[in-house]
Image 1 (cartoon, each protein chain N blue to C red):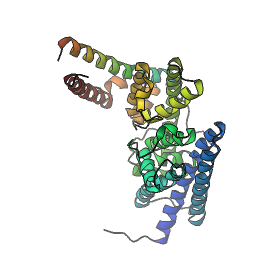
Image 2: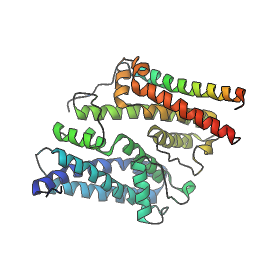
Image 3: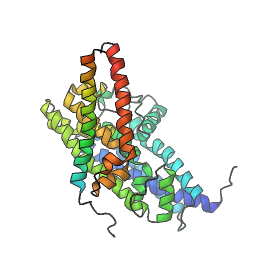
Image 4: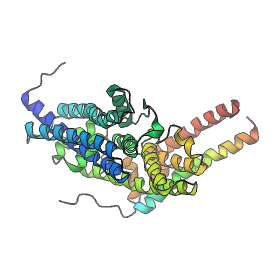
Length: 306
Length: 41
């Protein structure tokens, strides 16, 4: 059944989509700052151009489509679907401007691969990509891993009912805290706490392996973001082999397992209900699945003489 | 702005528990490797 959109539907969809775009544009400040601090003027300009485009687009939508009405279920689903498409189109602009992608379509592929935490890439000459673009590749993976809508819910959206519909629309069903905005903020709290701890651990190991402190820290951030959201991007074309370090790989595995845990479970454990880690069906199933697949893989590799 | 989220009191112990869980997985995986090498499968 095809529903005919009314003007009110378009206004509600446009207004909330604008909010999400504004949330996304704010995240582009991070690579701008990184670019400026590393003296990468041209890459920083790529992000400023993209940020301005996203800001204008977001502000136009929120002003033109301003509405006090909350979202209906159908509108919520459409907003989320459109937000992923728009995020891809806007997130690909700085990638395309870098010149490391052959076409805008290739950049869109990488942006969607990042947001969907798929990890496939069409980049050319990754090893000479600027710091800011490299960080953006990983940042979109981190944003997509937590959910594009989650950013907007954490900072921009006030209506609880509409927020909940977008939250569910993004295939999330964890009702951790009484309202969805507090839940979104908790998701960011967990993610950022682990981001700090994981980055520090990776940076220390990187430095012990002979990397310079700034480089070790940068690689730590990027690898953490990719690992926590089980994405697969890395700052170098050799992927994790680049580091030639067992401890680095072990920390990455720990981060990947932590990233695989449900946020509701994180909440229970962080609130003191630590027995949940051995009782919860998700962790038990994860443990069994990892062990079975690990055994099969290990035997297979052994047969190949690895 | 109304503060609608508080940092959990037991976060440190919670993080330690979760990291321990991941380390146990790594340890068991390591033991499987060890057993495979002994059995020469």
